[in-house]
Image 1 (cartoon, rainbow, N blue to C red):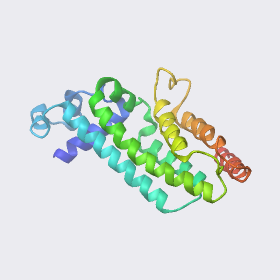
Image 2 (cartoon, helix red, strand yellow; image 1 turned 90 degrees about the vertical axis):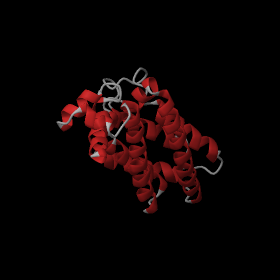
Image 3 (tube, rainbow, N blue to C red; image 1 turned 45 degrees about the vertical axis):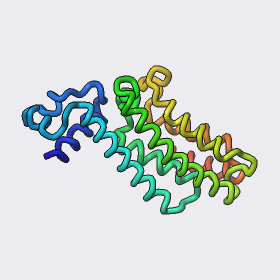
Image 4 (tube, rainbow, N blue to C red; image 1 turned 30 degrees about the vertical axis):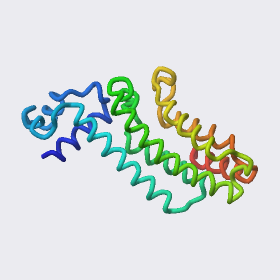
Length: 201
């Protein structure tokens, strides 16, 4: 039952946001009493904490699977972007931004875990790109990895990038192209242009 509650709550959070969903909503969705939910979770915050940890672990596992394929680093980033958008429902309600605003302690913990994971992932991706002649050899890999994470989390701010003007799939594509054009070699640019063209067909 605990897993069922967590699964239902996670689906609701991703679709409607962490702030919007109440314990009543979860109980109604499952056709159970709130008392049943409280027998497994002390409060809504406990559900959110477990939910975000579950989402994080699932995303990390998926990204690890993608990186194991050892595609070229440019394609790899597009595969990761597609995977994350698919599993976060395109972040229609920007749940992570709601998390930051209304549950800052949980958000801080999650952001630190995200940073540690993505920093390692990006350093490996960029280093491989440099070795393969797709990324410029004179870039500061640590800086580029850090700025990529900062940008990827920053574009989730709905006040700066409202979904009505910047649908998530388009926004992430724009940011990824912006990131890559700053570090590619002529060889990498050719591959990137071909990839963008094939994605648009």
